[in-house]
Image (tube, rainbow, N blue to C red; front, side):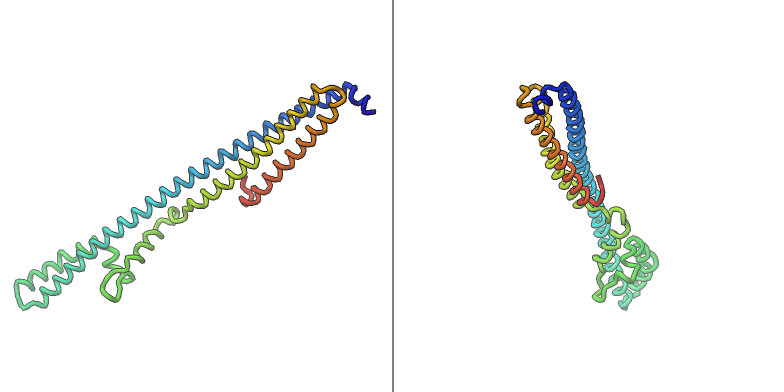
Length: 224
């Protein structure tokens, strides 16, 4: 029976069909591995963009905070000077203090807003709560605060790992294609053996590829 099967022209047709199927599967697997590699690159690129945006926003918040703190310090020093002049017995100093309180202090207070106007930033020792002000500045940009570069880097690592394991599957499929092509060229006695080896490796590679996809698909929470 095996001899009859070896000599059957249908075997050539069957091998040709199997080779066509395996070739298409290998091409798809290679495409998928390439797509995963591209996704890894996109994820790490997005992570870098988010990191730059987040750092730039944080730097701007610190710059603004120090600017406000500088104005607040100027206001506090000027206020202390005005109070000293007001408590002085010198009429000229008192008049100067009156002018400063009427014209200069409101301007300085406005420039230093909100540190000098919002009581929640006042500390009991007479200084300002800069940590609270910085937290408020960060909260003013929730979109930037929500950026998580590490999540993108982690996703990139997952895609890179998946790409490496998928490449193993592609290699297995390519090896199976080699054995199937060999079965088409082999002597009649060894055709079935090489065909069986090729089909076996193909099925193993197919299962490998599917399991890798399933595992990483679940790790990403359903994201391709």
